[in-house]
Length: 178
Length: 284
Image (tube, rainbow over all chains, first blue to last red; front, side, top):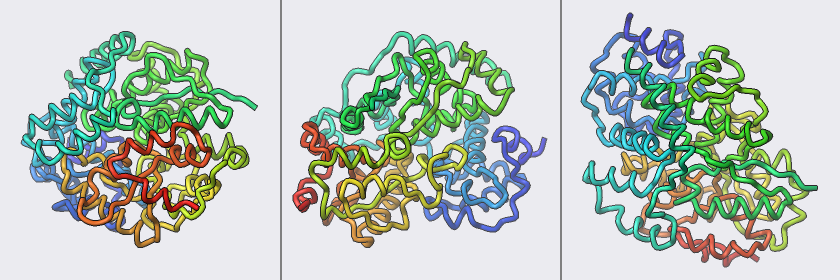
């Protein structure tokens, strides 16, 4: 299977329909932070530039805001393409250009698996320790804490925890087999 | 007239979005439409699941829909834009894609009957409760408060999940704010994403996006922004440039509570990172 076909299958999109009108990149609020921007990245997928695409910071910078998909004249949901590229990059062990994002996602998903809900303090705290981006956010973090907005303990709801753990198990057995 | 709604707060509203949670409950109570929180709800996976595993992205919210169904169905109010988006996407998959429905029913162990409806807060307030009932509660109009309605991304996009307003030119929140007496300024960046997903992972990029939006809001003549998303609120306040004047970001329900003169309003204002007092002192 060609790279673009693989991306199509995983994302449910038909990216071969793109005729490069550039509307997605023009409206993308993160394009200025990216190396290529959404439409160029899509073209690279069409051309089969697997390594350059999966190693690009752009796939991790996409905020998933769906401005591209809402404006695409060919109804390609490019944010879904970005999700598929992130899944492929992790699955293939490509070294991420922006390691903080997959680290965040991994922690987030582990936390939900363990407790059924997301606990902001441990998610933020562990992420900061792992990425060593700690100091700049300490003052605001402390202020939020003293305003009573950062509960120390996670909420553990037994029924949610049990069901979510079961859902993870059912989903991942299939996912890992692929 | 009393109607009750099921309510899904989501993880953020139990923590950094605490004043959104409290003001939402108080405002619905005041409007005669009390909320009952879903029992045993779980995290919907926003905003990481979709970058990790497509099936989990649908299965996590599907469990909450199964709970809503079991707990009486009807409308489920979801204030958080990200939670709303993910649940609505799962709901659409369950309603329109037989293959996905069969798979989700098997994973989540339930039978989908479609009796629960995923709704977001501003949709319910505008389309169900209506502006007349909102106006009837206003005791302290927000006269002179110049504000922009900021929707951001996931509340209005993709167009498949947004069945209550125009994805490019939404008006619902602005009309609610105007009903409170606020002066709603026209704002061209009302649906431009604030980069909340990058707030922790690419803070410098998020800061540039935030300062651009706040700068344009100021240019539009606003002194505050109103939002309906906990990620927007914290990102817009936390990543806003610390030099110079700073613009407070309100939850739409906070401003409703203020106009309704609800007892909690003063307390919610103290929970902000940017002190909203100077702006609120300007209300005539």
